[in-house]
Length: 198
Ligand code: NI
Image (cartoon, rainbow, N blue to C red; front, top):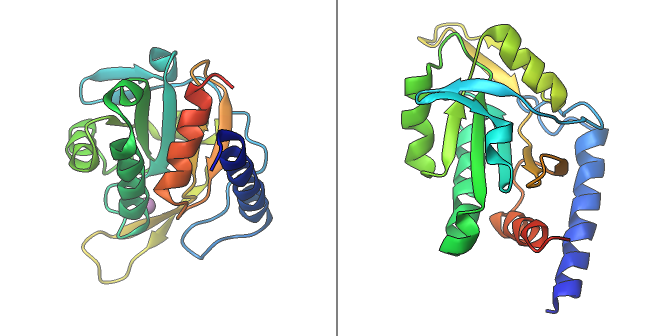
């Protein structure tokens, strides 16, 4: 397929997907994001010190909000993100960064997050902050999350959260929002499209 044809396909897929994301809850455990999030810079803590979105100017950033005790939604999303990263050439991969923001800062430590995300891919960094800091970043991206008590579970509570993956361009602009379950190949196409400077 030609580059133009491929992008048309991508655009149509994204257009359709964005309508779905904005229009309805996808499932009980993955609330929809708030509409038209502005995005923007933020700084949170990783195991290796503070991480700012600004640190990755010049790179495409894939951003995701979740938590390490998530039974299946986060592992699926991170596995798809890792599959997309693994499709890239070394030159392309050098211009891409994944960020996993924990919305469960009471249980997710920066050290625990590092171990968790590196299991999926070394180009994903895990960050979190105080409950207010995390809430402020989530608000920028329209991400939603809330705790649900679990009776008879050692975990005590789960966190239902929106499960989209955000693509941020090398100049820091929120450009694409992929619904949960978006095939890795679509994410790869979007990364290549943005890296091509269009
Ligand atoms: Ni999750």
